[in-house]
Image (cartoon, rainbow, N blue to C red):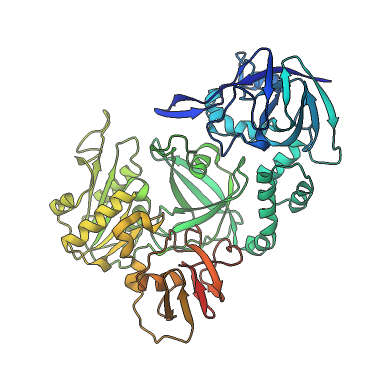
Length: 580
């Protein structure tokens, strides 16, 4: 018979983590005597994040003390105290491979039922003082589990744990955890899990969603190819380049300088696959793909938010030999005219498409004036700077200018950078690039807005400003009202008989083959629906399709749910009604 070794509680409190204030209830401490257990919580306990923790199905978190010995050995530590892993109940026995979803236990006067495995978050790593502990506990299979409270009562450290019900035909905590995080295409396993009535609604919803996409996944899986990492090279303290070749040794599909690579990541510890796009940061004329990726921290204004899952996965877990899935490169931001004067304007990691364009120009040779103008914080974050310096020395018509907004003590002006400050229109006017140049712009939203507004006011033609932006169009403010798609969506063919209704706006119009997508048509009507990739990847543009059918070109990486449409890459096949 198992025993309740310790009851641990804490109320949320603020702590400092990496210069930010984080609120957490993970610092549990043992309490003595009898404690009241209620439907949603234990007296004296609380959670800071009620979305990820707490509630009826996660009222009490249970962890086996047997796991303590394993962790002490693996981490080389002997400083653990009860509640070390943020658990409410530290118990004897009750390992994850022995406990089933739906098992019932009586402790003291309280009746409990097992509802789901633990879902760890980054705050556990803070508590453990182990940066990568989130991934380690998932891989270990020693997660622990949650109780729901069937009958309120009282418990006390030292109480025996009486087994009331065991479902030996059901799934253990370890098995359900594997289905969620690692065995993500085990559709028979999902069906078995959904037969378990006590399984918490959140986990049921995830398994149901995966089953609903089973047929779609089978159809789209063949569109992916496997790439293998052949090289990993740091470019700065926050940015790293990853080199990929085709796993089957076939030549890689070519791309246009500036385009991005859509990838699909199955990240250990995440319950679903991640679709991401990263700009290819070298010229097309190579036998490899290069992605140059910045490690994204949690937003400064939202310290409780998670850091960038995919970028941190690349930096921390992707090594030479790692395999990922990708489709063909795509994107509408690329070098369009290699004979006109060109100005490449970037900030931060927005430098990546500019390097691709610069390298492509160098390989074919260029005689026109080319400017490479880049802003970043300091040398610790400056990626590929030495490469640009070398290119500038090799090409007489290439001029470069680098600005550091916060130079570090080891940064030397005239060597590492040219000026302290930001890239501004006033700076461009001093540098005097030809206003008849093609301007390519990529960087954070404030930089994009400043550049677009400043360039148009300076007299640069709208059609000569090309930009890359990944995020909802609404974030760009005035810039979202003047998009490349809208400028390109000029009527060059007669309208056909297909009718398009934008129901929320009360606009009815005819489809015209001149437009590349329903999004283009909407923008030409003065509407500003959200979009991001414009290539059927991110699903930012998804809208309700009330009536009719559409064709996709290019095909989206994942088809939206029935009754929905990705307007950025679709055209009407019949009369349609779209909720825009």
